[in-house]
Image (cartoon, rainbow, N blue to C red; front, side, top):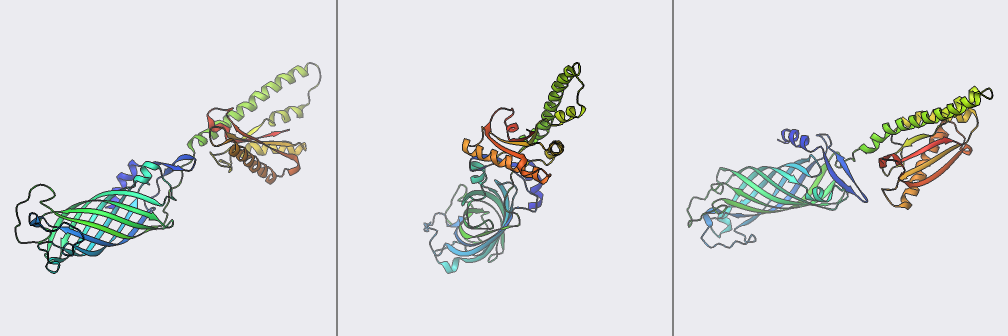
Length: 378
């Protein structure tokens, strides 16, 4: 049932808005084999028979003739941080309330249900893998069997699952639920005073469960790539080429003027054209180069610089619309140093590299274009 349901649920919910300190992001839907969990609980149940209506029995769930201890086990999967499915088995000791004698009311039963889970903590507040408390209402349906009376009955149920995080793998459960069965589930053979209205005409059970959840395999959700930054990478490379072309055209115009007066230096033309500044782009809040393809243009500039023993200036930038000025200054420094390290790997002497941190800027549009470092020959 989980496998069939995943086809529709995963198809409708491919991502979920999430939150981490100081910024919002989306999370990617994981594969079907990720985000599974198992649960085991000690359960306390209180049974309310439809036949007891009108007899004046105490409604307290703490009465011995009404309650009993049991257990439950479940296996489930989260398809998004907010939506999951759970298959749950519960039993074995219960009561069928026909009197106030708990020995006469004793019975054995089991219930098997499929439940849809809604993690409202993630859906409302955003996904946070370190959140301690998750508030998870659910609803479900299934079948139960009273083994003492050999009766089967369908049921509907609603509940609230509270999980309290101990680690990435383990959480404590506090599960409160209400089950409503068909009226013959309890197997009682006598008729009580008349009662009307739902759920009075049904057998009902209230449950309190305490136990543990264990997350199987990958239990977290990855941040989706910065789509805006990825778009900026290709556009940024085009912009860099256009800038080089504009510089080349301007230089060619200057050289044409020089040709009318003196013989031009062929090698100088090549050097000036190749030495146009090159941009290397980064994702939001990161100092790791987003695409190594950006370094291809840098390599060409490096070869010119090494051939002429020229100094190279690396200038780091951050976008001023994200983070504080102090944070952006630090981030731009880290970005410049990351690119400088790449230059050293390409054979440039550290003494020939000048690192500049420009901080947060808004000189380019869209804003993601400002998340970069430029490399230029000084």
